[in-house]
Image 1: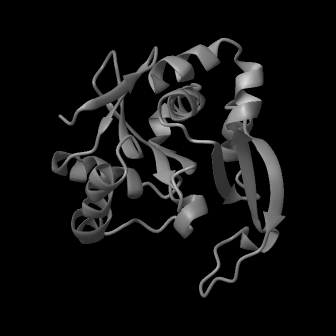
Image 2: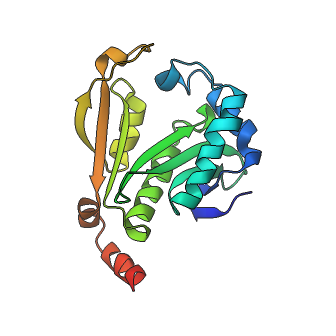
Length: 197
């Protein structure tokens, strides 16, 4: 098991490890999980094992505190999926992401894990802006972004060689800035100031 980043009420977020390959392959094999990513096509095991996971493991060293984190059910030990704070170009921004197994949907887990990562990024890492993107038609993911505190920024269109259903409606970007988050969470300034000492 990889080192633990943080615990929420129901979720343990820990580093991914090589032992997670079967979990990640299983996650990406569900057509509903992949619907708004690949049109439902699974990610081949060799891509997960030889490309995706090695890239994620290297991120931990390049950008401490950022990257993708396995979400584990604290009661059952079940692999729920992953949550991400992917590093931006200059270290002041991070992209929020999440991908959960269908059995974890509809229970508020995506919001719970996302909110915990947002708090961690703003109070412990000095991130100034968190952003997220999804397909405009992915209403469930947009709802998670909104419940986690992100605000709609824009709709934009990308050109795809092999567009999936719904791509014609474009992509949406949401964001949350640390100053705005601090206004909604008074008292957290002390945590940031204490860490800076």
